[in-house]
Image (cartoon, rainbow, N blue to C red; front, side, top):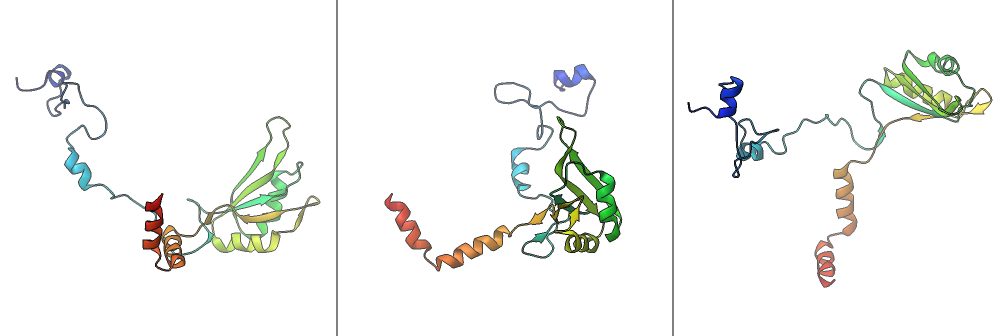
Length: 173
């Protein structure tokens, strides 16, 4: 008798239906027993990827180290790329995009290695080399940029303690 009518109609005796001030049913995330105060307590507690090392450089993808190869001839086949890059280690994945209209290669490919050393050696040896008469460029597909913390501290150092002067100038406008 003290259950909301929606709970009684559905046969659900464990879940109460929440309503807003106008009497409308509240649905969605947070409606089932988590009030606003609990949501604010959890604010900012997010999972993150551990940051190892600092500065710029290559970044590992979810599964491995991916190289970006450009300057490929339009007649290039997957086997041509595989034969050239397999000397440096086991290729985990090879992706060669084709143009939908022409059916030819778009001019780039992605090659993934399991180990950093294999990918790094392939870049060192094959960047600027020839494949089917074309000079290819080989580089990391993903790179870590400068950290935001590092960039913010460099800006503050460049200012040399002139923050108060900057605030005064902003107030003038």
